[in-house]
Length: 127
Image (cartoon, rainbow, N blue to C red; front, side, top):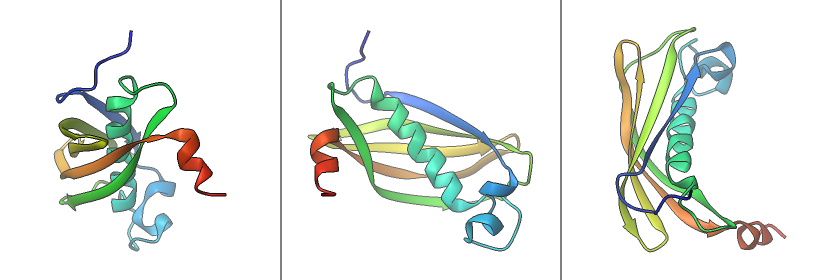
């Protein structure tokens, strides 16, 4: 059964810090710690998943804006969980509160904006 698009929808995404998602590997730094771009992608994934089941057929969401802080490092082997909660709906614009935690606590938080788009029309813009 599909969900109704409404404030409060939420989801989580989880990953483990591996050599390929470190700052050194992604080029955002030179340390073997969880990269900020990897944290942002995990937050975006949680937001995308939060509303995926409530969108009309043929629709998806695309990320448009992320305001975030990365406040604590996480080393190799750490499990990271990102969460997203839909806090505002303004037409096609969706706003989420996002956060990321490891076993020690919060590692980052922020606000993420996504827009609902028609998949086919969006991809046609690439032609």
